[in-house]
Image (cartoon, rainbow, N blue to C red):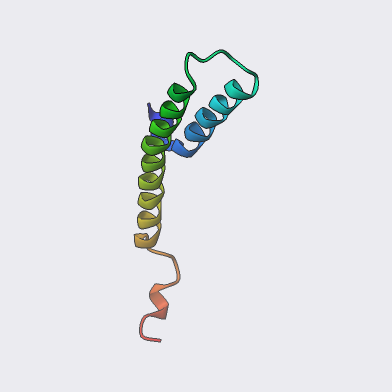
Length: 75
């Protein structure tokens, strides 16, 4: 679970790639619509998780102090 929280984009890319390979190699999936629904749900959930994680990283980076910038105040 820690890996998923730390690297959601990698997990998302792996899952989507595996689904694509299943279709490409002709693995028998009960119904084509099932694969479409699974892909859509995965994209919605994982996409949201990736977006939130990346937004949190950006917010953290913007609020972190940078050495040397304290000397530039007032210039």
